Image (cartoon, rainbow, N blue to C red; front, side, top):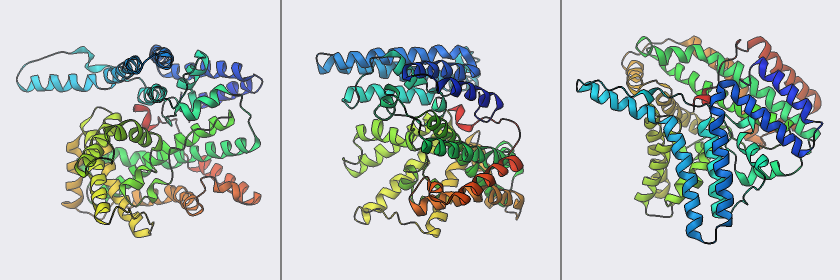
Length: 465
């Protein structure tokens, strides 16, 4: 069930009507049932995976908390790690390695048939697995108390607004909201309504209108030359931003209407001036997860410079693999690991102080660095990336102006709002405007959706991860 579908609007209206007349425990039961219905619209057969993951981590967390000694506590943590990562590896990576194995034997003239090479990837498995896993790790570290109510924990894992594409919540932030009564205030209704409205704008006006251009450059790389390649990558940069941040806004807005506060997932990422700054702004719930549960346990920057570079590279390569078992995601992770290492090396030469001053030139320069990464991310295979780069520089043509015009037309409202939020250091700067200005802005955004929104419910990009 897609956020940008009539089915979801009807579904949420029914759920919300019932939600408002129930007490906390009844609300939690309703949301849990609604979440399983929501997920079951993709494939009901995978509901068992969520239920199994929930059950294992619910039991393991309590066993860890009750364990009489550190050794037993650690053993229970290993159960959660092996189960969750094993589940993720089976459905997300087994097919990739099986296909690579078959290709290797085919090159030698042998035919090998591994049926599990075509395993279906359950939608959102990376998100809810990391969310549940962070909970058990935090219980082990003593940062979170183990949940004792199975209903509360099941709702924590399966909360439908952020179930399939995040933000990846932490137990310390979200679980207390599940366990305590909620009060939906007028401010929450107003904030939630605005987040949903502008999230839809980002998705159906910005992201979906970029699809024809990005489909052409990534699916037909041999036919794209010169500036059409560059402008097509610009289109993808704003497609993925509008698509993913639009989803996050709708998720946060929907949660606000229900009385919950979800983590921010984006903070004006295209105003970043270096790679470290970018990862403080883009997919924040994943980047902070990788920092807290991978980079820091590896030693972070508390070790020698070379080990720090190693830790950065491991973290980003695994971050790339989190997106999918494909060589282009590995290359994307290596690219971001490399530029983080270079940035850290330059920072150390300046005495350990990072220059995060925002200037138009620095923003524009790093945006193009980010776009090079998006080229690696968006191609179906690495050879297409090389072909596109060759066609950009060796077969240069002054073309693609329609793409640039479309990018500027649809991205300008989003970038303008990001600029206002950056300038004011207020993610809800719209709330500070006088009432006539706010209502005029709401009307303009709604009109933009009606007049320029792409028709048909197109799937969100991050649903495949």
